[in-house]
Image (cartoon, rainbow over all chains, first blue to last red):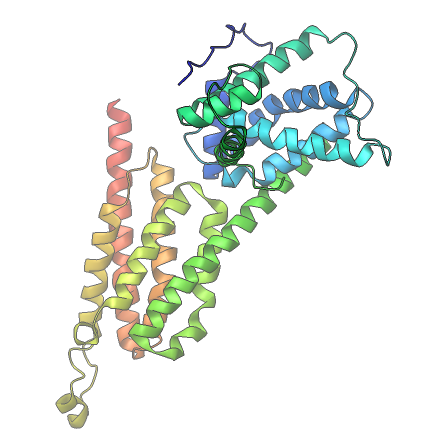
Length: 187
Length: 187
């Protein structure tokens, strides 16, 4: 079994609320404590705007971020207490942004929206936070599934594994990852 | 941003209500299955009571929700109480003598014992207010299902059972709230 390559150490993020506080706030909100709503909204909004801006550009970032937040808060009561909130949040947010991007793409065009030519420091930090959230979700997978996902991302080679077996492993790993992130199949 | 936050809050409340309804329907289906076995088909007409109570406590969540779950289980216990306990005076000879059901106090004692037992086992809340909310949840959950049992009893017996349950829950809630406020003061 190939050893998993650790990601580079990350610097702290410019957001006021740290991840442990966010987890606590989300636990409280999922439990029905309405007092946790305002600080959580204030903490998640810049992250949603950052994601939308990074994927879709400045033009519609605010609108898309609001759509993302509506979706996230509509599902807040389904949040499993005791888990990390950011992987869950980014999973929902990325799905929503992808759906909006698909809708806004000109018909017949298959290309992804072009990334910004020079990403801002805020956008870079935001990308790192998202990578860390995905890393935490991958860390919850078993070794085989994690290795398959990382190999798919070209981080580790899969020596001696038949392509058909590898495809099955990747498919199973993505299914498990969806369960961990709380994203339903087919989304 | 205020308008967006209000929209997100509405989405949160609607999401909670949707989740609450799903859970309440499942819970009520269990109660009805139990009630039909214990009391007969007539109990189905009382199904709206546990459905409304469960939806409310699930939607509000927090201490009220936790108390409501305990009360729900207590209510199921009232369905399981045999008629021989609730109606000691109503055996065939008593009915024949016309002195049936002159001892609703027996039902009251059953209710008090049940109310005390249930209220004493629910998880400790951190504040006095949460204790009171949990007590209200226990009472709401238990009474909504006990009402189904009462549908099969005579008025005096039903009042005895309900009064006993309420007395037991109120006494235990007050005692635990008092103990919680004392331990808070001690800290």
